[in-house]
Structure formats: structure tokens, C-alpha cells
Length: 497
Image (cartoon, rainbow, N blue to C red):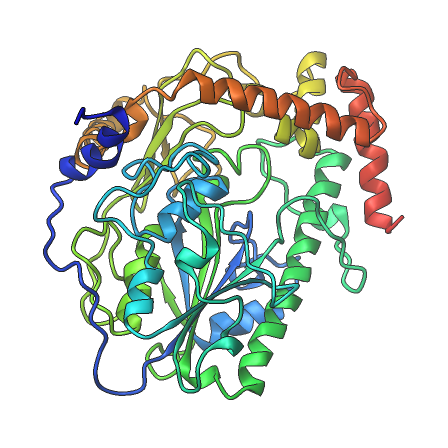
């Protein structure tokens, strides 16, 4: 039988990673009560909670969760958009290794995970756990799965709520919150004034920016209230003491230079863990954590031996291995073709742009439809009214390499690639990224089928026309007129009109 390209995509990366079949069987601990594991997953969220130092937002339930357990300050997703990130989290593997790196790819074409990779719920099922997944709003509705490989809900999960399990059966449950995905939702009980928010220097300090940011933070407050309801349910059902609770975002905030980008706003996420009796309340940990580390950590907490092929590392329990680097990747998002890679240490981040001839703001229908600050940047760029820092993101091209000292420059606005004092760091991170690409079998090196790109071009053009028409606007509206529409819309949203 001929060896096909699909065969190659399934096996090449795993072979390059040197995976073995040893240790693939999950074995549950035979002693003691096995804890339940609950993952609370919010969309599009950076560490903008009160417990992370935001003095404007009110997040009492999440702040209490942090106070009762551990707050991790350096947790990062492996992708800055939902479907590659979720594919990586649920397999403990980089999406670039398993062919899940392009946003919403392979879900309907029969592509399956390369052997021996599995969705980790299979190991939980074999160990006697009940796997549940649901939307917060409806315990009978499966939560957002969004994997970039084929498989049904029933293939990976046993039900939508832990109440469906057998008596005494431990559960692994995932509750999905749509917040803080756009469209944002105001919090009329605790409004945030636009003048009170802190705006990063790469955004124009403008009413539209402040309104948009305030609504994002209010949506986070709405999320906090919903998280509180789930935590209260654990208490009411007598499950809190034997349930390990994890709270994360699936990637960073839905803003320009955030979601779909490898800057901190795109990959830095909150990570809170409450494990009664095992984690000292009020713990703060600053080691580097990748979201692919969640899978082996969940398994370890449950007494299941993580398979040796996993690229993630356990960060709770007796046998933990600290990371010196985390890696993240961005590939095609919707109709916008791209390939970006980064490696980050505690202090530095190195970014490589594989298409430097393309602008940062290549057209993306989703972002043009949803991000008012994008249109604001375009208008101010046309008028010549951006600061040099803001203007850099509107350039027609990108540097091949970017290097940032995150301690001195947390907003990543001073590229140090040409700094003579940083050449040793630059060389180290270049080499580390090259090694990671080879070691993990980065499938971003393989061009995507042009037919897939053409499909997404058509889909997103239709999406944009439909949504702009739904707003009562022409898809060809000028940036200035669109900005005026956004101003009126944001004011109305903030006022609850």
C-alpha cells in the first residue's frame, strides 16, 4: 500500500520526537479516595483578575480561589487561538506536532491523532473516571470542544455533567465559560468607568479604547460571578474537599496584539489551582508553565501514570520538572495565513516571523468585525496621529526576529535584536527554537493544502459580508465611518441601551 501524505502527517513528527511505546497504559492509584478534577475554562482571558494585581476589576470568587490554593504567575498557552490551544491541552502535545496547528482544521476530513497520541479523557475513562463536559449556561449542553482532529463528543466524554456519574464514581469535568469572548457583556451592578482603566502604550489612549477595555473587564466580572456559582455548587453537594479545581483561560485576551499573536496578551493566561490538603492556601508560584502541562498534571492528581510520549510536564505532586523555556506557535487563523514561533524564558522572549513581508495587520474578517481598536489604529495611521510605538504595529512588513526583555519591557515594544549587549541571549534563543522545531517535528514546515486556504478565504468573506450587513453597514464602509459606528455602539453598550 502506498505511503500517503496523510500517513506522513500522522507519524513524522512523533518519529522525530523519538517517542516510544513504553509507559502508554494509564494505571490508577489503588489506595485512598481518588479526587475529582474540575477544570473551569474561560475564553480569551489574560491574567487581568484582581488577584493578579488589577485594582479596577472586581473578581471576588476567583480571588478567593487563589487565596484558597495556588496562583501561578507564568502560565502560557501553546497557541493564541482556541482550537489549536484546546487540541494541545487535551492531548498534552504541541499542536504543531500532532497536525492541529491551523485554526479549525481537520475536524471534518477524517484526520485522526497520530499514534500513540490520545485525548487524555481516554486514560481517565480506563481508570474508572466519569468524563463530563458542559457549557456553564446549560448542564445538558456539551461545552465547546473545538478540536482540530476528527472525533465526536461521545468518543471523548461520557456525559455533560458530573451528576450523571455512578454513585461514588470520581469525575473529570470541564465547565466551559464563553466569557470573555466577544461580544462583551456589561456588568450593571459593578460598572467600570473608562477613565479608570490602564491602557497599554501600544494602544491609542482614546475613548474607544477605554470603552472597549472597560467592557472587557466588566465581562470578566460577569465571568467571576458564574465561577462563584459553580464553586458554591461543589460546597452544596459536599464535593469541595475532594475536588481539585483548576481555573484557566484558553489563551489571551481578544484584543489587538492579543488573541492570534504571540505577545504576552495572546499567550499569557491565569492559572489558579485549589487542592485542599495538598496545596497551601495563598501559594504563589512563578515557574514557567505551559498549558500542555495540564494533561499530565491532571493525570498525576488522579493517580494515573502519564504516558511517556507526552510533551507536557507535571507541575503538581512529588515528581515535577521545571521548565527553562516555553514555546508557542501561531499558524493559519481563519483566512489569515501566517507562521510565527516563539520561545520564552523567565526574562526574555524571542519571536520569529516566517512571513516578514506581510503586515502585522493583514486583513482578518473576525478581527475587523469584532475589534474596534483595530479600526481606530487604521484611522489614526491614515491621519498620521499614532505614536512611534503604536505606528510600529501598522507597518507594511515585520522584522524576521523580535527579542524582548520582559522584565525591563513588559509591553514588548523595544526590539533588542540589534542590541550588541543582547547577542548572547539572541543566539541562545535562536538555537533553542531551531532545536524545538526539529525535536518536536513542527508540521508548520509543511505547506497547507491550497484548497483549504481557498475554502477559508471564501468562508470568511461570507462571514464578513453577513455580519457587516447584520450591523446595517456596507462591507465596503470607510474606516472613518466604521469608527463612528463603533463609537456610538460602544457608548450604547456601556449604557445598556
